[in-house]
Amino acid sequence: MSFTPDQVDLALLAALREDGRRSITALAEQLHVSRSAVHQRLDGLREAGALQGFSPRVDASKLGASVSAFVLLSAGPGARLEMEPLREQLLGLPHVEYAALMTGDADVLLLVRVADLDQLRTFLLEDLRAVSGLRGTLTLLVLDEVINRPFLLPGE
Image 1 (cartoon, rainbow, N blue to C red):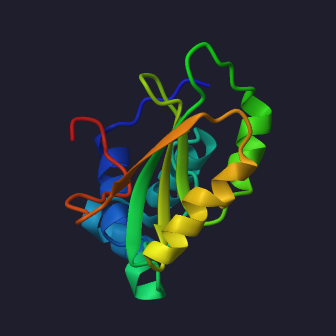
Image 2: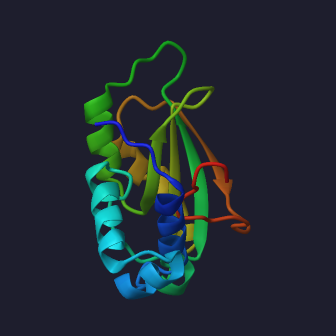
């Protein structure tokens, strides 16, 4: 199914990005469309897979995870990682907020959020051992999150 968002769809997504709890009525007023148009637009965005759900934005440090780090995982030269077993192993790791396969010198990028450096050390020296086929890691501590957007719209 082909889907191309128009300006109203993008404005609706931008309004939801600002406040995902905004009512249909408030969205309709802001966008100068009817309530039924907002319903139809939301349904269309969901059916197209452009809008995948609604979730809260959380400050992890307020919940006790005050240390964030990007961890690059490498399998080593010529090694081949098996996708599904790797995915299952990464899903089983604690403290991982985000994981992605990537190109370049590293094979996997993790965003890890932990309470303190002791917990990060345990993650790096013990928890990562559950991931088979890895030969090396590089850990980058996050000093400050300068930009943390939930998503970008075309042209942003």
